[in-house]
Length: 259
Length: 259
Image 1: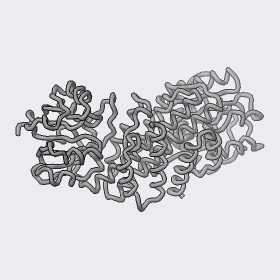
Image 2: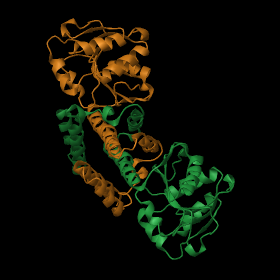
Image 3: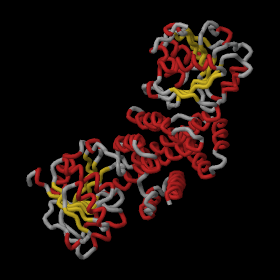
Image 4: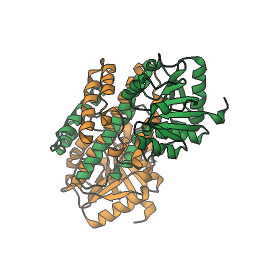
């Protein structure tokens, strides 16, 4: 298979499908076709990747070297069981879905999981994104490693069980950390303080972990058992019972881990 | 006052005192003396800043242009009320302590609050650190602004009430976000997965906020109301009841804010 001529079909047109297909295009792959149930989403991504598009599984291009299923976890099983969906050389990009979802569907199948948070309108350097590979056989594994190595410097072999825990850890490290950033912004907004003032702190909180463990990097009232500051903070939050609950629960857990 | 000859005494030798005094030294100030109750800490920082040190308030150098009190919130009041502690031109560096703590103590007093998380062994670019200034009079305010502008490009005027909320927001944005990183590492450690794999995700979660609001940047199961993934995650956490509590509470709050 010539490296420049890899032909790929994307099943899905969401954040992961968009970022991944554009990156694959930029690395010399052809995106043959975008499939999405939503024809407008399919069309929009197809225009960015110079590809065909469809919302009809019967019209799926049969000539691709690889089919990448990049849709919500719950939708993956549905599409694979669809009688019109017949492909080999297929991967999904989901953290929480095991490789066995493809078992009765194809011979060459696997997982191509980029461990990152993708948002519309935010470009990202793929070279730094860990890509976790799992495959039904060694040949297909090599094929996926070759492809992953084209777009990233951090390619890992990982089985479905480990990948589930990795995905779970990502929910804490990204989604839940981001919610802490959201609450911080919300507190400032209500005081008419421009929340841009948070950015250096947020950047440094992340940067610290390049040098220190999260345990060693911890600072603030809870890790000092500074009950007076904690009491002051809970008073300031008196109109926000949901933030009080979160403040108490996380502070208690920080305290328990350190004392 | 000649810029190069500013003489400063630091009360405290912890993380903030250390980072700040070294930065002030590097910008051309003289650090006359370090005071700490713990003589070893005072000595250690004094060696790094070419200064004297003491653990005796009676021996405090009387000739400084500025006294910076950088100790825990609870200790500030105690030291100010100490009969041997007599100084003018004094600031503290605490987010949660109001300026009025100095009211009966001096004429020129204020707050010099660097809004950042400081850890031992982690260098940091002060130019990016927001420094929040409050002062008892305009002259001293100008003096503090001049000093702050030497070390940072982001100097703000902020009153005590706003600063309390800013400090609270920092607990969420830094301490609590860091605890999410800790939990993520902990989950991976138990699966023997090298937690360095988290770093690109953590960096990007922080970097996103340079372009998007935390609300718009949110991804993951809770914001998609993907109850199936959430259930799988709670199953994986079955041996960690404290993480289950945190997972549920934060996921519910993300859901409520978005639906």
